[in-house]
Length: 216
Image (cartoon, rainbow, N blue to C red):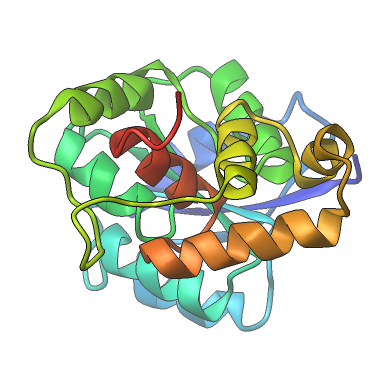
C-alpha cells in the first residue's frame, strides 16, 4: 500500500503530538495535518486532504460530532476514525451511522490505531471489541431503529450475500470474485443499500446490518 496521509483533530496539542510521535515508527503513515477544532479542520481540508482523519469528539467551537457529519458530506473519500475518551454506546451508534469509519478510545495503543488506519483504508471500516459489544447489545435490543416505512426489511438474495460478506470484512473486489459478478455491480448494490438505509459509508451499512439482524 502507498503512503497513507493522516490528519488529527484534537484540542490538546500534547495529545496530538503524542499520537504523532507514537506512530512515527510506522513509515507508511505520514501526518500531514493537525487541527485544534472542527472549524480549523474543515478549513485545512480545503487545502490538504489526508486519507484518514483521527477525530476527537469534545473540541471548542465545532465539535467532533458535527465535524464528522460535515467532513463525510463534503469530503466523502476521507476516512474518519473517532479517537475519544467517551466510552458511551450512544456516541458509537450515532457516529458510525453518520460518517465515521471506526471508533477508538484514547487508551488504545499505537498498534491498534495503526491497525484501524490500515483497516479503514482496505475495508472501509474498523470494528474493535468495544464497537462489537455495542453492536451485540443493539442487535439484542427490542427497540430497533429502522429508517423504513415498512415493519420488515426485505432484501434480495444478492443483497443479503453482499451485506453478509461486507460484515465478514471482504472487500468489494473479493466479494465480486466470490459471487462471480463485477466489482462495479458490488459497489452498485452497496450504494443502493446505503441510500435505502440512510447510511453514509460502508461502516454505517455494516453497523446498520448487524444492529437490525440483517445477517445470519
